[in-house]
Image (cartoon, rainbow, N blue to C red; front, side, top):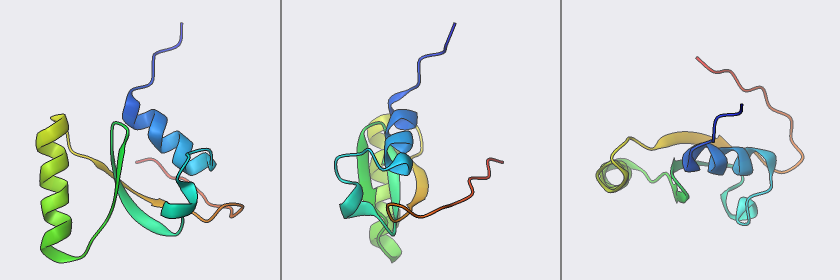
Length: 79
C-alpha cells in the first residue's frame, strides 16, 4: 500500500517535474516550499523572516530547493 505524499512533497515533485502551474515563474530560482506555498528566497533578513513565517504557519520548517529551467537535466542527491 502506497503512503500518501504530504502536500510539501507533492509541490516539490510538481516543481521539479515542470508540472507546477507557476514553474516558469520559479525556474532558475531558489525557493522555500511549505505545503502548497512557494516563496522565492530573498537575501538577508527578508529571507530569514520568510523562513520563520513559514515555519510558524505550518509547524515545520520549509524545504529550500532550486527549481531548474524546464528541459534541463539535473541530479538529485538525497542525504
